[in-house]
Image (tube, one colour):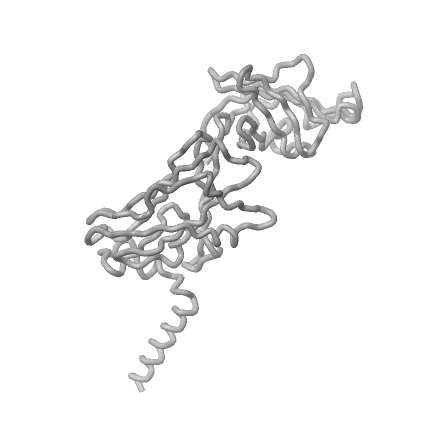
Length: 313
């Protein structure tokens, strides 16, 4: 009876593993092992997206950000688990698998397969040397030729490995290729002022939203074109309430004069305020913005001075 019980338990465990595609592989092959044939080979850039070892999405998605230059080297890393690294030189073959991109694209967040005209892969065969844990494939991306209205992505798959086991969770991934122009980043609100009106010439009073913008939460400038950024996370006075009604506010920089033209896809009335500065200072990486909207009904006027403090993640 004990033998039958053990046999039943083994068969049941094997069936569960088949049903789940052995999804809890991180509990079986841990990085404190000795490597060898039981080690996992995985795409090292992919972040964990599972709970208790079970995948929460079909494929893991990760964003690769880089400058919108004529050609950019985008590294794709492969890991070999185990503290001792590869037991011998390990040959790994990578390939493009854009079915993964198609499966992860949604109406709310559409993905476009990166056209072959916008990238090359000089070598998709990698060698992890004995005792090492990583190898890198380079994707050469022609970022300056991107259509910034699209979100490009590549599906990349580990096709084979001469040692170890290709990860079921992290053997395939979707890599979003995010080109950033030179103005993209996180900006501190150095100073600013917002004024709301109930009618032309009539300042809203009382108002808890009118006042200084200095010290408000940081603003993100996000690439939407070769020389255009979307102004995100604008707040009223006090910083707790988001500015609504001007979705997709954008600043377009004249690369010759550094003058800026403001507009908003969500509100056609948003525009530069006549006679006031709208410009970028490349020496200090500072934007001075003066714009308004709803000019003939209930006007809103905003001044922002934004100083670059670092790249976006």
